[in-house]
Image (tube, rainbow, N blue to C red; front, side, top):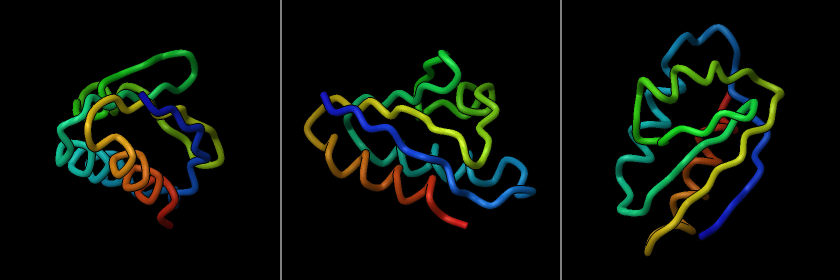
Amino acid sequence: MLTKRINISIAENQGARPVAILVQVASRFNCHIDVEYNEKKVNAKSIMGMMSLGLSPGEDVIVYADGVDETQAIGDIEKCLKKS
């Protein structure tokens, strides 16, 4: 299992689009992926779960990945959370 703290630097005022893209990216991987924000942890492949987090730019999340492709999964999710 890998864990990584990532600072969110997505642009504001994009609505749900960044979260939808993150869910699409996470869904490409076989490993289990969770995202934790403000002491709430959800499955990164769940659009409803991810929307419930209310992610804000400038804040940190913790990404957990467990499985054969966990390294690539965390790297790609970090790229999603760093886009502007």
